[in-house]
Image (cartoon, rainbow, N blue to C red; front, top):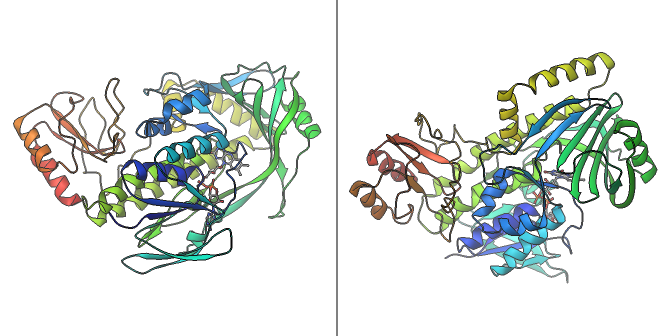
Length: 491
Ligand SMILES: Cc1cc2nc3c(=O)[nH]c(=O)nc-3n(C[C@H](O)[C@H](O)[C@H](O)COP(=O)(O)OP(=O)(O)OC[C@H]3O[C@@H](n4cnc5c(N)ncnc54)[C@H](O)[C@@H]3O)c2cc1C
């Protein structure tokens, strides 16, 4: 195996990538310019799809123990419920949003990495880098001021919104800072009349107030406080202001105390066009940032890492052609576009001003949220179970068979079976009836395919599922030539 992959940034995304690569036996170094892990709750939600992917790392139980399950979200006014979304019926082992402060997510991931022998090198700054074609030369500065020149086969920028890696690639972070100003309070609330296993979003004439349960009695409060034309403006909230927002926009009778964190923030909606160039990739906030509405930011970044890790491992271990890595950017950029658009729509709806517009919005949302199909689509979007790669170069076109997922879609995990991609080697799984041809195929492609087929979803077809649980190919039952062809293109 070659020299270590260099991961710049040990936030949730860099740590996820390090954990995945370590699982596959890929050597990594992970550096972070910060001396300490964050102690802030920042991203609060882990969605169902992230938890499913974390199953492959075998660390979901630790997160479930540390987090709090929230089973739905309600949009409310002072006197009525506009609509309710339940996650309980989602077809996943994790039909809930797991509320867990980002500080805990990072702690658990870092502990998991440590268990695999990966130590985050703190106070180590990536200063610059140069893609030399066959390798990347990176310049690091250590806490004592010493500079190190490092040669790495791949550099991954997990270094957040102000990414050195993105700037080094000369990429623009296209988009805007929205004019709305926001208050964030991580506080204790007493007298809350809302269910503690629900996210409560109040649409008031003045603006939105959202309450996210964190631990018993502790909540994240978010509210917008109007617009500014000053791009640099930041508002530092006080507890008195938070209390006033709760009194005016909430159901009444809620008292805030014991603040853990008070902050003002602005929303940026920005994204790169390409998620890397040559031997350098971008993931997480380095590639996309957007409104926290929907709580998708960190989840999207972590899923960038899951997408990249198995591809990098297969390429570095000589089991797949380097061209496999070219699917990372298009797949994740399409997801980034969708997340940006959805978060933008949610934010626009929540911050709408004007009595008439708000009345129309409330009536419309109330109407559509009573349609089961709309609720189902929204639930699948929020939980990220509907993420799919229909247009990916890794998706064999036209693959569909009734009763099972189409090519590009997620293969739902099955009870009693390990998730596809679990274990110490990224392997595809073939969901097909057993046959000598399927056995011969598995033997020929032992480096890429699980040795034994799994039961097909329905008779009449077979599904080839990637190590990250997405269907690459759907073919007629027994059409092993289609699978052979798929692997030929991969290698
Ligand atoms: C106030 C606030 C509230 C938020 N709320 C939510 C929410 O509710 N839901 C949600 O999904 N998201 C939320 N987010 C966003 C979420 O925190 C980010 O999406 C997430 O942290 C992105 O993870 P990341 O690993 O990509 O980047 P980061 O967490 O930013 O980590 C990047 C790391 O790279 C390091 N680094 C930077 N430059 C270098 C360098 N040159 N060399 C070495 N290391 C470097 C940094 O020190 C940092 O540790 C919130 C963010 C903020 C600030």
